[in-house]
Image (cartoon, rainbow, N blue to C red; front, top):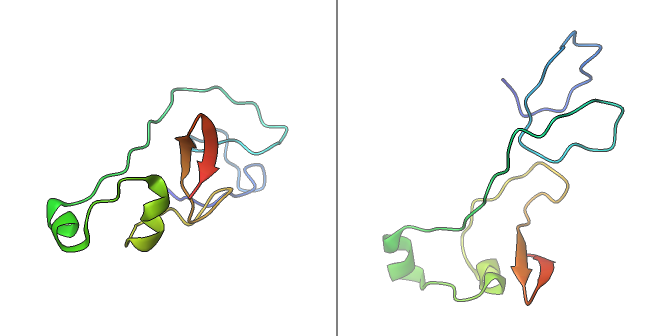
Length: 86
């Protein structure tokens, strides 16, 4: 198991399961489902640092973010009906 995007043909891989958007390619894909992402924190963290009231406030907090994908280190939110990256 790996998070790396490898050349499936040269690695001899016939089937792969990915939790991500499939980049433009000539691969055939079938969507198996959708993930709902949520933001959460430990009550002890919020007691020490305050609880953010708006996604933009996450910039001032210690967050664990994904470092792979199209926008590493950023989260997408719906803010005022528009997709915004934080």
